[in-house]
Length: 292
Ligand code: C2E
Ligand code: MG
Ligand code: MG
Ligand code: MG
Image 1: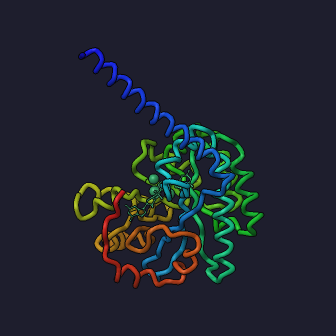
Image 2 (image 1 turned 90 degrees about the horizontal axis):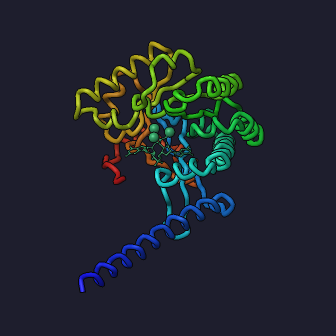
């Protein structure tokens, strides 16, 4: 009867729910073991100075080589790393690995290139960041000016004193600091005068609106102008079309990162990427939006 059907349905949902909980637990357990099992890897995306066509720096982007799911992108696990505290050891691994890789590029003759690493707010709370960064640089034999740390505005909006002290120490040691996804956070602009910052990265969402939305073009223009008057470097991210490239050039933003030049590539191909004339590469590339 109807009652029985109701119960069956209840059982069915419970089973499905259990399966889903089980899957989540397995995923989390897998993530906990990923570092020890050497399943993390870094992909590298170049930033091109369009005036010379040369790669000036490279962003390191974390990937998880999941035994069953294949390559998992950070949006699917960074949050979990943060919630479980695992972001500290994993983040330290990222810095170590990126410094080593950068040193290898230098030894291969690409000796001016800098590597950029994303740092989560939680890593500033651990208080081991400064030490971990210094040690990674020393171990790799990399000079500090070749390491750039990318922070989002949420880092700056947090406990100012604690973050500021660590940033000053890092910057004092010669490490470069950039603000990632600039323009999407909620913090006041005044922090730019208080924090030691070297670069602003214009968020991809604004750049992708260039040519489509006048407000996005206006914000992009304003960020570039502000960076210039504050004597900061500016990097356009998520550049996919030559129209976006020309727009950025026109407003004095000459360093760009995006699929127009190259998507993030695995470490073993990263040295080849540094040897390519990126402007020629952009010319022959048929721009296509990636599926996210
Ligand atoms: P992000 O730091 O803003 O990195 C840029 C993201 O934009 C990357 O996504 C990159 O693949 C993507 N991208 C670059 N150019 C284009 C383009 O032309 N078109 C499109 N559609 N996308 C483009 P990814 O690698 O999935 O990383 C996502 C976010 O995960 C990063 O955003 C960063 O916030 C975080 N993340 C990545 N690696 C790390 C890490 O080692 N530590 C921490 N804490 N966060 C990381
Ligand atoms: Mg970044
Ligand atoms: Mg970004
Ligand atoms: Mg981002």
